[in-house]
Length: 511
Image (cartoon, rainbow, N blue to C red; front, side, top):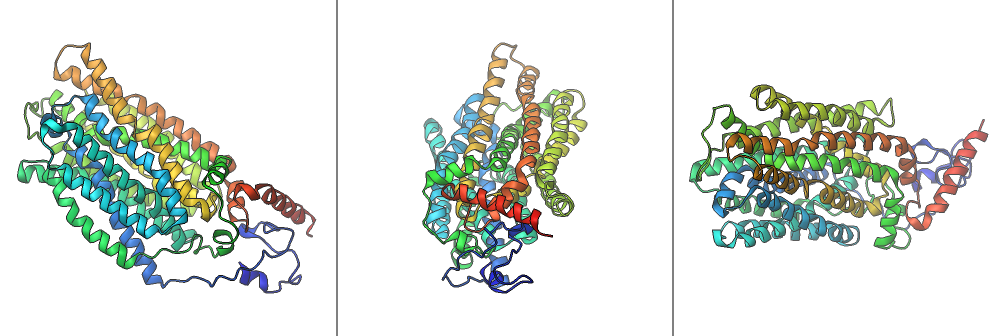
């Protein structure tokens, strides 16, 4: 920014010049912002790509850890002798600890070394996952506790890693890199199901799946330390004056700023709806499909472990394929569409969710009668949900100033999880157990109870589509605020509003 301001334009050094994003006067009253004395930060392109590859690999392992347990859920229930409601609580404890830890890691990530924070997180979730594989059946509470510690470690990565990518890449490059990064959410989730079920088939013991992961995570930790830099906040946008200049705002000031950023608020509620449905499906879908096969006479009931893991393998493969296609499709459609419509990102998210809602509803309704159609509609619904991951991250990075992005990621994760996938697995299991308690003890009634507990997901995802439509109404205004130099914190909000308004006035007066 400073280098561009230093060059005289057609109207001289002090004449009106376009601000960030092409808004005339967005940098103030037609004058350049103060120069900073910090030296420009640069990184070779190969190093940035290597760092992105490492972060994608760790993201893969992160989400594999999330979904190893759902992939062997029937065996875990038999081993610890727990009901559906208690089994759902496993994921709630995991996500609950993640969301409680996310604001802490967001605060640390905005103010201290992000690489060190990520390393501590990997050590936490890896150590807790390994130790949980040695817990005996009479200490089920300790297994629940260990899942909470795994969630705490995962919070560091989910909060901080996207902000590093946001500081290494910009514009179309950032969209593509985030698309690849978020591909590993469904890919990791699917491989978690597949790893758990494959290890169960090979060893006859689901706990060995938790003992394989630390070997992969040790490699990830070495690569992270060796190849991933910790760039200055906002380095890719060359906004060192925004990212590092001026006094550091407090955490509460950052939260107030984000609470007034309506694009961030509405997109966070949209993500929450996606997380609610993804959490319920991710945890219960393999068991739901297993019981559907029993109802159709294609599978014998599971009376003792090890149970059949065929549906976990199929659902895992389905999640991987639809996830890759969905994330790439969503990111590429967003990149192309926003060239003609600046509100493309939230509109794309809204459209995909509003189409996913009836697909999911029909998949659940048709499961007792047409098993194949249910699978197809479930796959289509998963694909449409996956279209949102990279696009939502790009929305956040475009509407929030670099110095607050760690806190913004943390708050979005916290709200998304506490109202989304922290509660949906437990609520689904609780409703299923409640419905089942008042019905005859049969596999058909157990299946119908789980099916009916799933139905609210279709309505929640439609509400998420509405939230993204509201995001579209505010997107351009909030993007302009985030790009304006020297603004974006609560302390400068009034100054920023005056600068934008005066810039708009200059635009109308300019012949």
